[in-house]
Length: 65
Length: 137
Image (cartoon, rainbow over all chains, first blue to last red; front, top):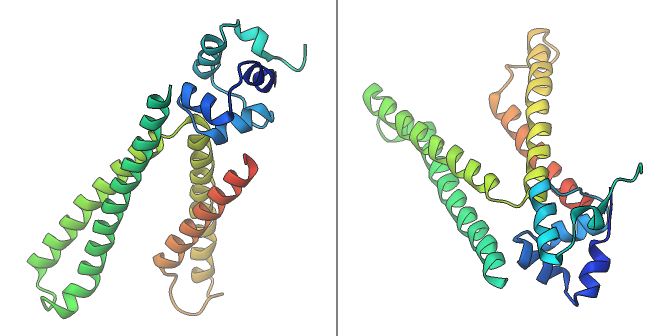
């Protein structure tokens, strides 16, 4: 799964640690998601959606599409 | 924003401390049962049973503390721990049975010791956690 987390984070002037704070996960998790090494659960994806005020499909895209 | 993450960090810290305390208590009771029977109460059956019950109680505490520790990690950390547990369980079953068969077929001298299997599980668990953390670095 591809994601725009890093871009959105940069647009919002947030560090990985700040995004981790906001999403209540570790910085390691944010880093792994940004690098495409780990796909978040649906509740965490919704949390990012709320944090960036964007629909989930604007943050995460299926690579097969 | 910071409060939530602090809560996660604090929770992990608290659960780690809790797990360490239960692990220490359990190890102490294992030592008590193992050495106490010989050196402290001269194999008195009643005291041995009481010490084993104490060991089981602290063991249950350790299991629950470990469960709570894992459940309150974030989802990536939980996945790393779950993967490590799957590896450790696999090694326990496959490695343990192979070790037992080596005893039955007299490939190893002496009896198969449960402590070897426990060490195998522990090492597998630790190595798997290190590999998991490295993989998602």
